[in-house]
Image 1 (spheres, rainbow, N blue to C red):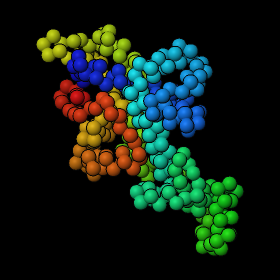
Image 2: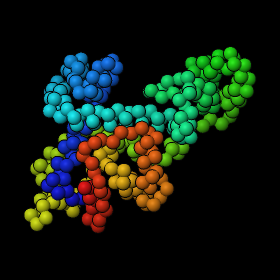
Image 3: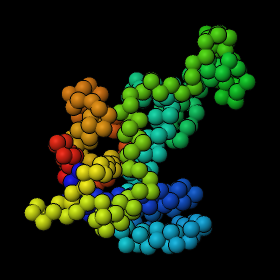
Image 4: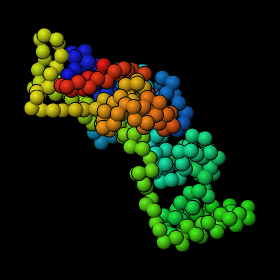
Length: 294
């Protein structure tokens, strides 16, 4: 791969900032809704700073607090991206566990559910049927809720199906990774990049011991003996560039139905993923000597 002098700072340093929001979002989650909203609006509640100080690594806690002050707009932007990734992981898990279907999600049928899971609604009867089918047991809290609801509604059809599911000899896996496209899993796994590695890459690029700066065209050239690929956070990509990256990373063609620009936009919307405002990687090029991000 090659990176220009400008590009090495273009997204790697921003990715390091994004990485720090992991602890910020975790600390924000321990505050009440009012203080979380104040942070999103531009304030930094003292309670957040107190939570950060409780981190075992005091030096890192101090670094994160200073980062909030020195890069307020970027940090808030990246916190939204990371929070959306956490929500997307909840949606993906529910899909993998068949607690609601893609069609339910697209048509918002799941929003009528009585059970809340990570801010999303799940139909209690559908969940109970799934639990009975995978476990063979009716001794579950949510199954009990569904049974009581069905009893009050005199829903004999549901009760019969529940018993049938529990008595079935076939037990499907609780999580079936084949049910959902690998594209969705790739988006969720790498939306905020790879945790804990971008500061390391900044240091390596600064020392330039794994390659050299070319005086002719001003780019950083990796040593041929050390093929290296590190992935930018996917929230940094424009829709078109993201589709091209997904096709490349997953060994697919851009024309494939699940890696087309339309398909990628649909998954981003369906999973409620938030893209960062800056930086914005607009182009992904595959050449004989590497991959270019611009």
